[in-house]
Amino acid sequence: MTSTIAAIDADGHIFERQDEVRKYLDKRWSSRDTALWPGGQPWDLELSGKLEPPYGYTRNLASKQQRELWTRICDDHEIDKAVLFPTGSGNIAKTQDRDFARDVCRAANRHFAADFMTDRLFPVGALPMCDPQAAAAEVEYATRELGLKGFEVVTDGMPFGLGDPFFDPVYETAEKTGATIGVHGTRHWAYEWGANKLRTFGEVHAYAFPAGVILNFTSAMCQGVPIRFPKLKLGFLEIGATWLPYYLDRLDEHWEKRAEEEMPVLKKKPSQVFRESSIKVSIEGKESLLRETIDFVGAEHLIYATDIPHWDGEFPENLQDIRTANNLTDKEKQAILHDNAEALFSL
Image 1 (cartoon, one colour):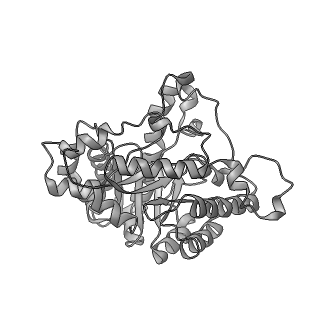
Image 2 (tube, helix red, strand yellow):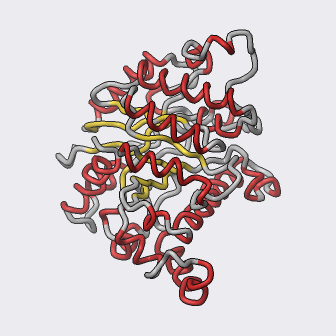
Image 3 (cartoon, one colour):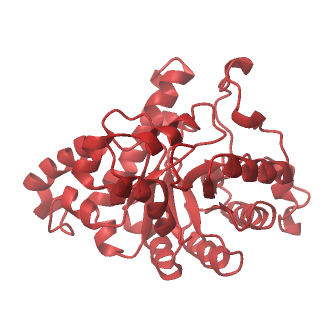
């Protein structure tokens, strides 16, 4: 390696299997043979095998095999710890049967804690976000009883943007327990962002991830989530970070003209609220405007992610790019690669 800066992966992934989650499901559902979470469009993600997964990390691996593979990846690339986001169970929140959604989240979180967690691997949990009281109770249970550090919230399938007071019980409990809320991009129900007008998976994937994240970022910022919940650990993940200067400028413009009526919680520009907050945003290693983004918001808001084992990840090149970048200081590299994620997930 060209650098001794150890990394923390703030957004790796697992391929959780429904048959393994089902082992932890309450017996009241034992005769129910439906899927545990809703599906989406049958896109050809890996182009019929043309896009090979890193490390042979395929979707059919059992949790034990994935755990061993993740440990080897960390060993091979000087990664101290990895925070592992689900790939499918974030969609449990879209289930209309709320009792079932609540219990499947509980089963998934038990599975993550029992079968993936080690002293280096930290899976995050699922929440039934369409039922905020149940979601808050699951935050309490999964942090206190299972030791989970945080929870994935995907950007679609919810009745409101994530700044709406509807979700306040979740944030209150997360703030109290120290749990992280990781707002994660998705293309799953991309029609919510108008992506049903696009023809190919590449178009849908390129558009839907930022569309969903930016919608919920807008809601959280304009409704003052960082002000109302100053100790909340909040991250926005998997669309890179170089959109921040453009979009915070745009929010500032609207704040200047409409804040008194429509953003009364914000007494400062959204860009300044963001800079003074503890919000973190994950980067892509090959973002050409990363230096300018750091200059605009500060390196303390950025975290590194491998995105293993997803088809569009750029690992390990993206890790090497940060470690060897000539336009980043050692202090900035240390913050982005390690310290910011350590703080965000209480590692």
